[in-house]
Length: 138
Image (cartoon, rainbow, N blue to C red; front, top):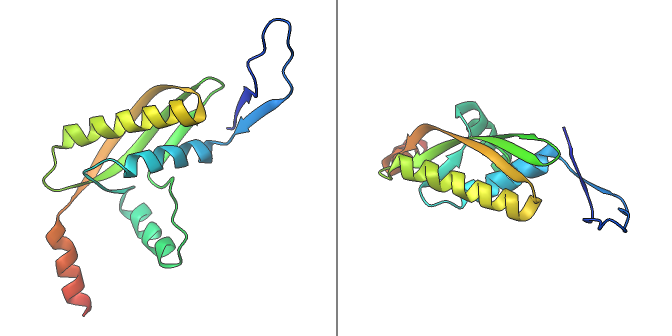
């Protein structure tokens, strides 16, 4: 569903000159970028989404909306985001920081009110996991 908002806020004597349409994928991308900037977030998305994301990154086609789904209305947005956190960060703090970052980004950039942001932490990244994978590949 695409979001439609007036391009200007008409005063009672003015008329709108057109409309602005913001696609759901754009809102999801804004939320994804905001979530990735939060300290303690390693990646977004579940296992399958991350595997597909790794393939995309191999060909330099990163999906910035990966792990984010949004419902966009005319004036409001609800978002769900799946996060992989870094070990040993406080998971509740990461979730709260992700939520705050997404709300701020959507309200500032998209201009819609955020009604809720549901954060699911589905994994914890341990830095030694990367070391083991590199050793197996060499």
